[in-house]
Amino acid sequence: MIYLDLLMGFLEVGLFSFGGAYAAIPLIRDVVLAHGWMDDEMLSYMIAVSESTPGPIMVNLATYVGSQKGGLTGALIATTAVILPAFFIILFILVLARSFLQNPFVQAVLGGLRPCVMGVILATGVYMILANCMSRGGGLGDSLGGHWADLTAVVLTCALAAVYFGSRKILRKGLSPIGLICLAAVVGVAVYGI
Amino acid sequence: MKRKIPVNMELFLTFARIGLFTFGGGYAMLSIIESICVEQKNWITHEEMMNIAVIAESTPGPVAINCATYVGYKKGKLPGAVLATLGVVIPSFVIIFAISSFLEEFLEITWIAHAFQGIKIAVGILILDAALKMIRKMEKKPLQVGILLVSFAVLMAVNVWKLHLSVMVLMLFAAFVSVAFFLADKGRGKEGRA
Image (cartoon, rainbow over all chains, first blue to last red; front, side):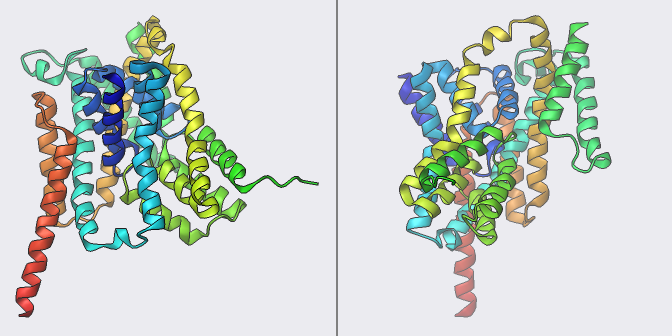
């Protein structure tokens, strides 16, 4: 049943996303792809929309997936599921166990989770970039079977990355994520539209 | 004369304002929450705010929810925690729910589809950047670096060959390995002393 799937899926996301929104993206991707709710392409559009609208990115993604799959009820269920673990864990720490996070066992668990999360986010970013560059549509796996790289996408990726990372050398804070998304949109219209 | 509004109502309204006007997710919110809750309202001290940032980083779920629940509980116990959390979620929920009803039709417009072709590339870069930022800040102990590299390699393989392994399982495994090393270390410590 879709409501139960949304509830379980987003509880899992809420319970395992250590380190904020970007840690949640691989988990949301997992849940969404496993159920066939969305493809990688639609998901990356939604990440951009969540980044460019106010509010917590994870909540935005949960609300969107929930409403696409189960209307208002689905949106309410997915959003509630994604925030409940955080809500109860903070209450637990405040009310019952102020020193919970200093416990050596908890520290050992976190010491394993943190680098794993970083590896997972890195792999998701690298995979998305490679998949974008390999072919339009289809995953990287299909592309390895002999498709050519999409040259336009390779050039765009290099150019946007150069601007984004390079801007930090010139501007004090560099280009913001929303700035990069807007720039990419303009470049996309210009390059793919002509 | 200014009418005094009850503290729980004020918590709700304040966090709704934070939810409505912060772009870029939880970490962007931390500085805004600090300026409102510490400097303007004197709800919590600067030290408590630093404490919240550490807790938010070590617990799962949206960072903004971690903060709202913490501050809400401090000022208004359980009702405060619930209202502050709802405050931060409701604006994004409403905005995304509204967007979700027309996004797919919106994407059928040609120039918008082109814009999103570009945006897709930006999203890959943003995820890569999030991972690199985290990795730069992490403690580089051999076990942690090992977990990071293995997690990266496993998730790349899962993505490329579309294997069935969830990120959650990978994370549980990483936590298990870290705890096992912690226990082995502790055991060795005892032998050393004996």
